[in-house]
Amino acid sequence: MDSLKSLNGIFPPIPTPFENDAVAYHHLAANVQKWNTTGLSGYVVFGSNGEYPYLSLEEKLNVIETVRQAANSDMPVIAGSGCESTRETIQLTNQCAKAGAQAALVVTPHYYGGKMTDEALFHHYNRVADEATIPIILYNVTKFTHINLAPKLAAELSEHENIIGIKDSSGNISQLGQYLNLVLPSFSVLVGTAGALKGALDLGCEGGILALANIAPKICVDIYKLVLEGDHEAAVNLQLRMIPVNNAVTSDYGVAGLKKALDLLGYFGGIPRSPLLPLAETASEKIKEILQQSQLL
Image (cartoon, rainbow, N blue to C red; front, side):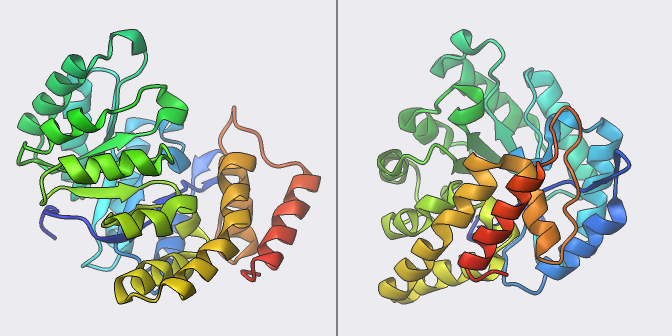
């Protein structure tokens, strides 16, 4: 399919399954084929849940090819390609494009965090967008980078024709509103925190890239559709029901918790790649209990 021009709907940042410490491509393809039937708009590989820092270049490109082949033809694949240097980000972005990605999710460089001023980030993203062969989506994830992509900077970057949107995982509803007020109308603002999905959609966000969508894809899509249809009471009820399970697979238990939840729900999650540790048995039981209470299991 062609490169993305705009973003709408719900996208899961899919985990990378491992078996005997190698990427389990057959399990990855099987997971995608199950997700294909749930109403999701597309897939994100190498978000924070994809264990992106632990994958070799060869593995990254093979993951993209696998997901592209397994996904429905009308479902775009977005690849995380942010690196610490501008040069490497451009190179990886274009390699991802050749492997089958329709857009790139580019996190803010952060190793030299004190030097990542608005000016430095502006020049970084503009050069990446100038030289990338696919559209760029900004990625603001302060939890990991300790850098916040300011609304004014996002507005300036939205003027570049090859920068089409932003994923904001800060959880700051006020900041989402500032993005929406300042960016160009053609620029998509996606929430990256499922706990804020309903509120973000009410503000005018076009959708979300949500860890929760891996294990509750239909419910996330339903919340999105209910808001569009104006059935806010039903959307709120679903949102409230999902808060405990969303907390469990994000802040409470992280990647290992998300993978355990996938295993319990009939997907293949497996265990994280070292140095991340698998869940302890007590935590696994807690995940199961939360899934049952949330009516997912």
